[in-house]
Figure 1 (cartoon, rainbow, N blue to C red):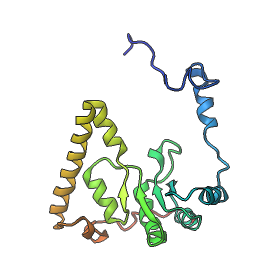
Figure 2: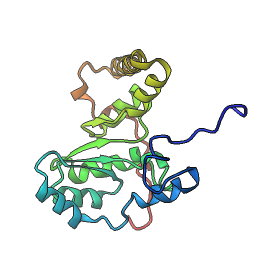
Figure 3: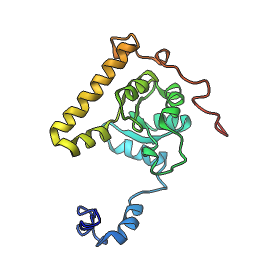
Length: 193
């Protein structure tokens, strides 16, 4: 690696106005996020867009209730892989509270921490309608292109089948929290909540 040329983001550095090299990429990236986004903005989007509206990055039951009240069709429980705020709680720990708060009003999906078929089953058993598995597909794509994506999906599917069999279940819709051994303090004692 030391002998190769420096890598960059060719789709951004150069083509994007004001980003000529890696030194100003960080500033441009920070400008792409609006910290002032709020539920009134979500309602405005909902008024202009009649297609599916999905909010990603929800980690709190109250925020989930606000998402449901804002007119969103679904939400994705995600801490963005812990990249944005490394002290954020794990998504899987927050999922039960969020499902309990809004699972009958809005679709709830999981978007962080999914690496195996067992992760998928745990998430579904806790009440998520589905999961985001982009990382597995990207790894497969990087390793073996289209065949790698297929192989990654096959591995996940086999892990799901094996784990369901070990749980004594034949149908994914039968997976519930009763299939899990959840530690008593799994949700954690959070200050203020």
